[in-house]
Image 1 (spheres, rainbow, N blue to C red):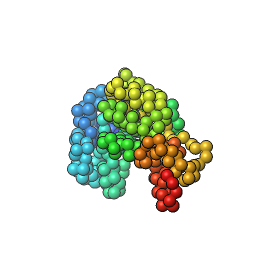
Image 2: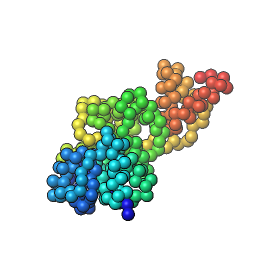
Image 3: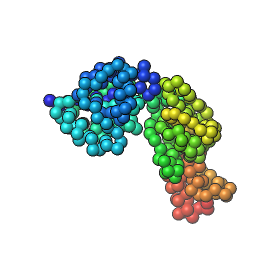
Image 4: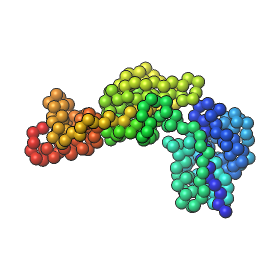
Length: 283
């Protein structure tokens, strides 16, 4: 019989948040695959357990190479436990490749539910929680980051992002440009840790605050695009672009800004402008 792959959630801050089954799984697994074996050692010491099985590293740099080895162990009947530095494996952390490979081999995959920075930040943000989407980490390059944000400028659902502290100010500034400076957001820092902080406000104000320097693990929650009282037609979208161009904006920026105002995808505004030009309507 094949073995079982267990994805185990680990504390995102306070060690007391460790799920009760975590210690049991750590003690009994045949193989423990950890994103950082040093952090795993600190975790097991805090929980007072000693893994009986083999401990191996499983991180972004060796994920592709180590996955076949772990699948082979699973096919041979092993119980493989996967843990990351914090939170649930596979959620912006190593794990997806192994889960996909295990599923392909009809190997049982289960989980030890645990803390999640995504859901914790969402719940604490004070923003709508009924519908949301997780966007993970944004691209590091400024142009790619702004482009990605503009793609979701019209998204009605609450958005959740992870970000590195040294890039937070640039990311919030890009959000202010893509979403509008008044879009509400919450920066959740050091969740469940001693210096936990939730900073709420318009994204433009948060960008100014972050420019002073922020430390720690960061999760950003952003309000979705507002509902429009009435749907704007193509002619009105084109008119708004024209007004902005006459005020000195480049067409690309004008289209992006109108898309944010109207709560529609940038492509819809772009298509309206192109159609107007094709029909030789003045812009």
